Amino acid sequence: MKRISPKTVAGADAIFIAHIGQERRASLSRLFAAGRAPVTCLLWLSMVNQFVMVYIFALWQPTLVRESGNPIEVSIFASALFPLGGLVGSLVLGPISERIGPHLTLSASYAFVAIASAALSFSGTNLMLLYPASFLAGMFAFGAWSALTALVTKYYPSEIRATGVGYASGIGRFGSMLSPWVVGIALAAGWKAPQILLLPIIPATVAAICVVGVGFLRQRSADDDGSKLITAMELPVR
Image 1 (spheres, rainbow, N blue to C red):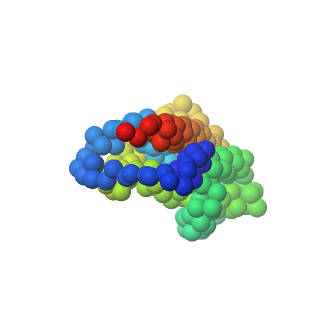
Image 2: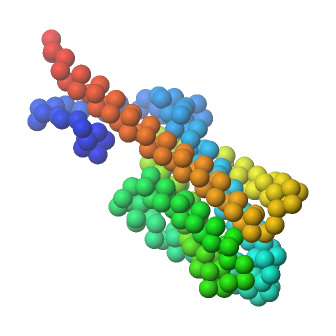
């Protein structure tokens, strides 16, 4: 009870009743029922921006690093550091998320993605900046992906958890289709490689705002549930 609603004070004789079996059908409508609609929409939007961010890095980084004046072997090595950092991030940020919470982990991760993206943009042919920035971009971009999936998993009750994760991942795939379109518009507008390497900052910022919104809505829902519980406990028993 302390984890669900820290502000709730329950007596030793309090009785808690779990309503089990009321949501047996794992359908799409269940993701929007019981006040879940705002959080579901925010989770989907954050997942779309997560995919946009990752795919801009993964698909365009080799070409953009090459166009920044680096030889092809440097471009290949810098691009290889991105998924390597993602492997490390997926292993490291998971335990961190369990310790400090997914909302803080995700917000910090997206901030570091923005910093790494800016470092990539300004790196040019400076390998001492290019290589660490590529590694850190992968570490926090892929690490945030894992933490975001964990957040989706924790939000929905067990009866619809698989449905919630499946739809969030599926909707997020639209981001993988949007990333070439976004970069194409930037190229058509005459943007150069350093400017395009700044693009991931936009989806990272939007995703961070969505995650903060999810945290706010979950906290407010927990406080409301705690207030209702206290009211129910104060009702006289006849």
